[in-house]
Image 1 (cartoon, helix red, strand yellow):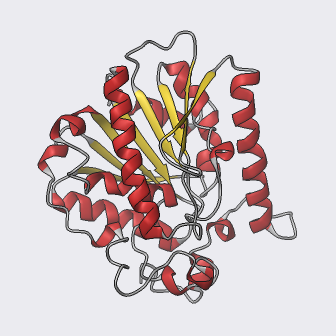
Image 2: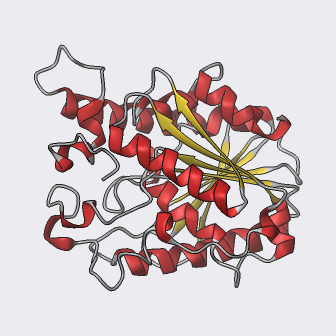
Length: 300
């Protein structure tokens, strides 16, 4: 167990129970989720309505396999690209709640791609991971076609889990492509699915399609990372929020250790004052700690 003192795994794997906000509400865990949905949707609407940011609606596959690419009139053709993958335990959330991160980055000179994906149980987690590999191939084709100068990827929660595949897809990520990737940012992710696979709160009626055969193949913590050298020029940031559960924090800390021991340039950071949700909400604020962190990655 990542939290040996845990007496309620369902609660430890449910991030909304660990916020310190909304404690004046009858059910803080529901209040923080409702706030997240309301605020992030507002951030997305304001990009085009109030901030003068344009968006291209693109598609990399069927169903919800969509990508919105954001930019403004000052964005150059070869501007660096920032790619964001949303969370939601592979079964919730969508692009309308995934654009908080866009504004400050576009104003900083980035082009920003926000991707969506098919959710479980429409697909199993194994199928979703295969579709995410197709997305990786699509986004690198896009970077090469548009002559993007550099790429940073970030994933939040389940999106961080999906993003981990980039380190394992040698058939997609050639040495030339990996050199384009300035940084990988894993925000509040979950990387070992063994404990949560049997939790009805997280995996009701096994909608993720997990079993003894595939549990290791869908758990980045357990993978054998063999092609490390092609990532020598890429920085990897594994980030946890102070007010996330001990299990989430320790999964992030342990995953950073796994990557470092394999030879990646990986670091772990615990962001003080944040929970699982406002660490995304505050990416919309130019001078917030998390927004400055993301913008300054390239110049570290």
